[in-house]
Amino acid sequence: MSATYGISALRITDGQEPRLVRYRTADDLEQLQEVTAEFRADFADQLDVRVDVDTHH
Image 1: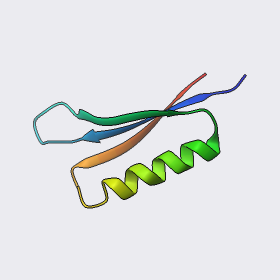
Image 2 (image 1 turned 120 degrees about the horizontal axis):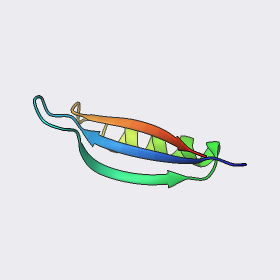
Image 3 (image 1 turned 120 degrees about the vertical axis):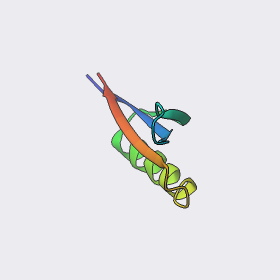
Image 4 (image 1 turned 135 degrees about the vertical axis):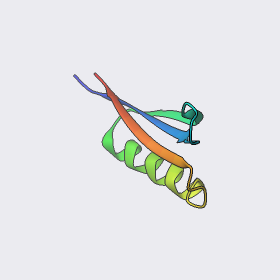
């Protein structure tokens, strides 16, 4: 049984619900690492964006 990973970039603003900026899925750990690194690079200068990973079996 393989897992699917959901990678979310969320904009965090004080006093508001996190807002989804970008979402992608990955089918394996290698793809997960690539997408996570891409998100972190794309949003590196935006301190209000957090990258989260969820696992779906």
